[in-house]
Image 1: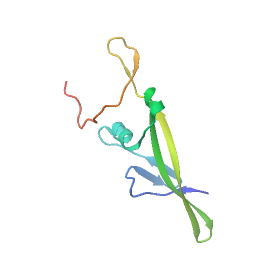
Image 2 (image 1 turned 60 degrees about the vertical axis):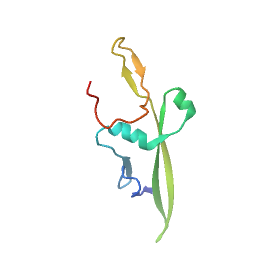
Image 3 (image 1 turned 180 degrees about the vertical axis):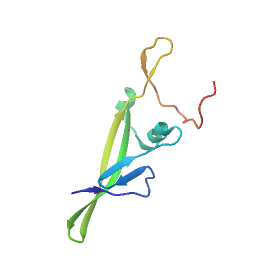
Image 4 (image 1 turned 135 degrees about the horizontal axis):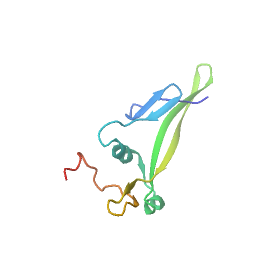
Length: 106
């Protein structure tokens, strides 16, 4: 059986037993996670769909004292939606060109 491994180069990867999670809990966490894991996808960009890619190292015991390592790539497609304040219609949001460092003041 394959089991996930911690990766010190991925600060947002949390491994507990057989579960691997990617965690972000700071200000603007969703935008930071998108920025860190965004996969370039021209067809998805045309539909304003964002593709996030996650790599999880894994290991399994082949025989006593001998293990094999690999890496799993997982993908998540998402679309960010908002409500137009005038029409109350659902609208697709675009990612900002530059990520904000604080909330708007207006």
